Length: 269
Image 1: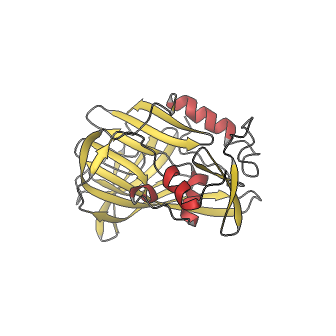
Image 2 (image 1 turned 90 degrees about the vertical axis):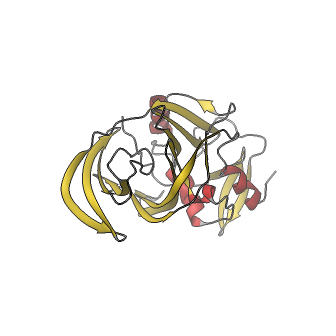
Image 3 (image 1 turned 60 degrees about the vertical axis):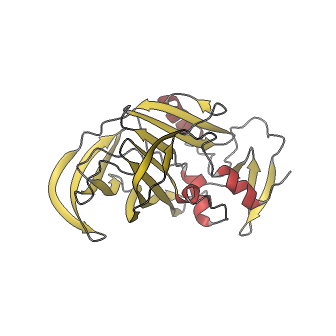
């Protein structure tokens, strides 16, 4: 049965099946996240989504703006989000732990891991970004080298995704290959709950096993042209829909691209 697009997106953009408040925000930081990659024909493309980073005193939660706004309307950004395989990441500083949830058809995966230390090297370089005086730092996380710009004008150690641990909020971060880039574009003084994420229905596994699974399946050369090639059987509610004239699949309350872009991992080890 083919569901209406608005209803489907309202479901797929909701990752937390149960709400357990663990903190509230001091502010919310919004980032543009871009990936330089290739389409199924090998042509260079840039995928782009907006992220919302909920920053509290104990915890932070990084998700898409689409989820933050509970916005189920169709958009190219929503389609890019499924190509980019971005994780929703909850960092509990008090417990030094990280919970990540990621939908990879036909399941949602949940990982728990210790909070990683990037081991930043602080540099003397400065740069003004969005009117904020920023300082440069370099560090390595999960096999990728990062350059970050942070501002002491916002005394928070938070940052987008799993990047954090500097003497100020991360304003911009880019990997050494120039593939992944996070850039702050707005902050809001807003007090909202930060809830634990996850569900008993999600597939739980280690971060390393999820990374290996993604490398094997999403990293396969077949993936851009056949994003469901690794699934043995189609679920009962598998159907088709059109967005801007392009056919996409829907199943298990998830959007599945008919064709995708080359997978660009954020974690290499």
